[in-house]
Image (cartoon, rainbow, N blue to C red):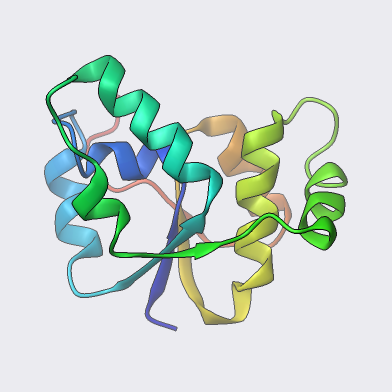
Length: 130
């Protein structure tokens, strides 16, 4: 139960400097990090928008990635109601797949956090509160 599930909003903060970067880096240190494979695309695009010279590769290579298979796609489609965006639902469903091994679901997206809490996950967003 030492693993943390990080969504793209949290993972991006590990690569580019944002208000919560120092807090999330300290929080994840020494823990196993898990995310959905879709985060590779999300984070790479988000980092490039913020700082085209930054390389998310080293951070992404440290993750245990959960693949989007047909069963997970069905679970994601049923997660969080119609208001939850598709990629957010994939993250919540991916975390649910490994929930027994998770200490927390780390996100900075309020809508996704609400869906994760509703699914029974412990949700954290280390750092300053805006």
